[in-house]
Length: 116
Image (cartoon, rainbow, N blue to C red; front, side, top):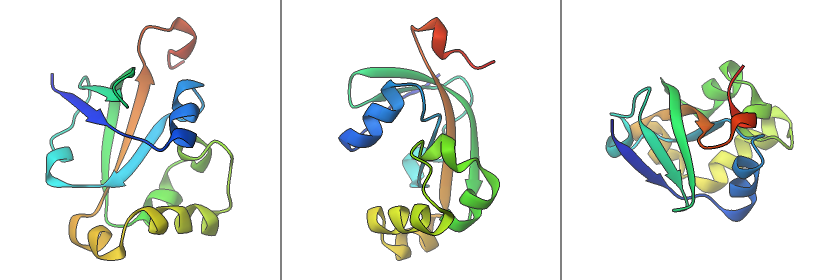
């Protein structure tokens, strides 16, 4: 089991803290590619979570087609708006070079956050 420290903007951290955000999507940098089920994530050095599954994709567009948008962005933006959010966070060359990783997780230490 490996521990990953991931940092989120405050608005996304609150979505994680509330239990509404269940999938973290990032450029699949080499240091994230080894992530697997059972690994731990510490968001912003304060919120512990366990990895449920990890899936690699070629593009953010592909992620948004295959994963539930409301688990990535609980405020439920349109497909195009969600895609724009990713492209505002990451330059397209990084998406093209590394691909994209979708990490499903569950919060630790709170029974209400257990996956059904």
